[in-house]
Image (cartoon, rainbow, N blue to C red; front, side, top):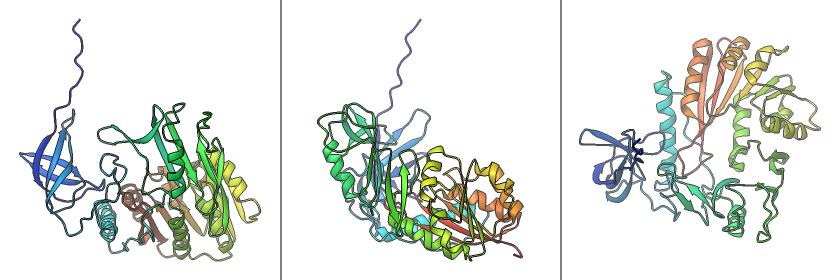
Length: 399
């Protein structure tokens, strides 16, 4: 029986290209010889020299290696690993223009879903777009910490990341080259508390940083939160605090209102909005997040926690809410959640999303069913990347 030949990718082509529109993944489209490719590290309108790779499925990706005619919005990237790392996509773009680009990503998603962009606000910036991340997850190869390029899958050793909080970078240097007992390492830091978590626990005598913590603490607006290792928490603490203010504005809560916090996580929104509500019902399915939420709501008398999937619990509530927050994962709301939201016809609904496409899909369903879309507010929680957070404000027609 003949031996199966291992696939050998073709060598890259070096091409001069004119870059066209930027896609929601932060790459620019380029056409050549009847083909098209997605080119990273470019800006629309630029003429560049790029290396272009053709993948097994015929898809073409590439990256800029020289700029012939630069955009007026181009900046020199700050990070020495920009490109090979691939964790950032927009470091070569002026920060104020990054905000406009991300607003454009949201506008495109709304248009594709048949929704008006008149409700779209300008992106709220990050006061300091560097050193904002409180969480890093490193790949480990033979003890060395780094990241894996999302296109080439090549491992890149990282000794300093300009997006990470200084504590994470200091710890990275202490751990670098000493973590051969694992293949993944997670570092989380409480930027307002000094608390930290490193998982998995490291046993090597070479390592002088405490690890193996099962949770750490962070403070938002003066409130302390416990966050377990598997639990989700926003990576940008200061921008998360801004989001609380935006949610208060959107929901216009009173001390008589029943607020439902769906996909509640560790209870962040529930706890911080409880002082402005009559009652808060928090719904969460993650066992880890439930444990954290139980600790975080302790002493907050008007918060009730329900364990279960939002799509199963929401429609079965015995009380009709006056306002609801939904903050689902990137895939958006489950059909059962949308059905329950339409069933309740709440006067005020806030939808928090990290994915414009799934947000626009769900907003189309909600507006088709009776809600009015009042505002879509992008918030930049992830400077220098293509990611964007949004808060959509809706109300029930005739409420």
